[in-house]
Amino acid sequence: MLNVIAMTDWLTRISLSCFALSYLIALLLEISRLFYRISVRSIVIFALMLAGIFAHTIFLWDKFQADFSGGTPLASWYDWCLVISLALAVTYTIVALQRVRHSVGIFFLPVILGLILFAVSIKGRQPFSAQERGNLWGMTHGISLTAGTIAMAIAFTTGLMYLVLASRLKRKLPPRAGFHLPSLEWLQVCNQRSLFLATGLIMIGLFSGIIINKLKNVVAWDDMVVVSSSVLLLWLIVVSVFEMLYRPARQGKKIAYLTIASFFFLIMVLCFVIFGQHAEAPAVTMLWAGGGK
Image 1: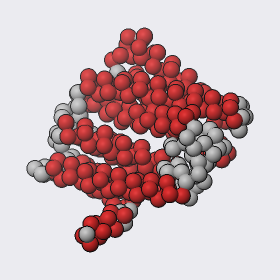
Image 2: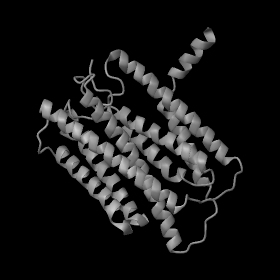
Image 3: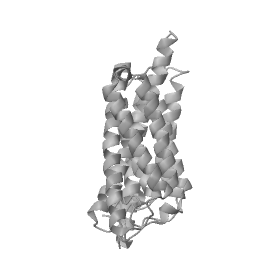
Image 4: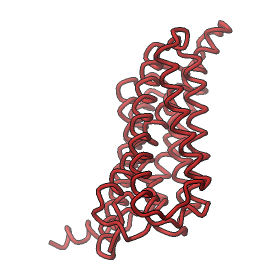
């Protein structure tokens, strides 16, 4: 019994630095592929990612329980960034397990660590409003936008890999020892599917946000975030239609550029939300858990 209590106490002491350090060491090992050949490197990276994901999950679960006892669980931008970084860490681990020889971690891990670093930088910001607990539209808004952002981050990463590999092939550069990427065909399929998924989810999220604002009327329709979000949605729809109808875009390079632009567009809109006056609006903020006390 004492051992169980001691283990529980140890798990509750897991900090953000535990999983961030695991991801950082995994990234350094991925980069080392370019310079050294280590036979057990992939095994060590996989073990580090599993340890990081475990610590990351326990950290969020512990925070979920603590928040739930006092009101809204996982209801801040800090939590939101950590949830997305965990989803990307799981995605990377699955891809890396299937493609052991490929250097996908060099592209995924900086995004994961960047999200964690950004989460730390905004930790003290105002949490989401507690007025929409159990509200269906609020939950739909938050979950769909979170999932859409994850899909867009995956599209961005695979698009970046596509451009790097396409550039190397175009310049007829010889394969570099320790640097291998999946085929252009595989990257193109992943990029396209992630982009379509992100577009659909973000569309659901923004439309549910419009419904919330229509019901609550807490943000002016000419607010910068409302306008930029509408432009983002229109951009994503145009990019998706362009990819489906314009045959040369199916070669991948054009759509990869557009995907990367879409990702940075999304980041810009999120910065408007997080750092602008919109962050204080209770009903149209991305409500991860619907809000409420």
